[in-house]
Image (tube, rainbow, N blue to C red; front, side, top):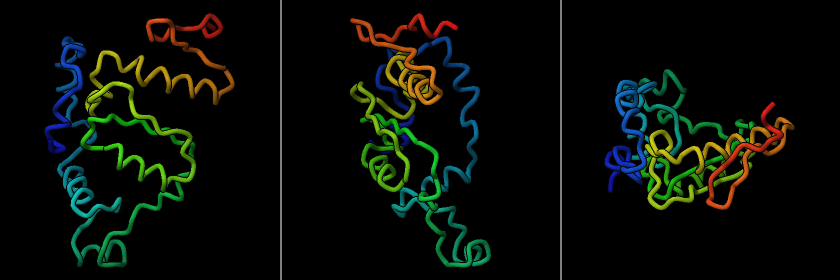
Length: 166
């Protein structure tokens, strides 16, 4: 399937909060413009994580070269955790593995433990809290010195520990 199909699908249609769907669609495509989508198509077509391609003449003006430069990922020094779904056509496991190899301070690279997890699932899935967000919060709490605030119980759900109620 192509990336557009993948963006429009979720791994578990029964797991979406149907009451939230109007909110999701009222915000799409938040933070995106036609230029964003053109840039994504350029990245896909050229297979490089490069800055926007204005065409040779404008690239010469903007970048001083005929081709746009690659993003300088070696300058991203913040600790970075990557999450990906095995059904994500926009940020595939192969793409995120490549990204993880280029970033200098990757602290982890996780494939979400739900078959078919797609790009849209990170926003719409009813179980995203257990599968992704709880781990993010745990990692942030560990980094801040608060300790682990979520633990898995016997049915693989996360619960708040008593020591994190403060």
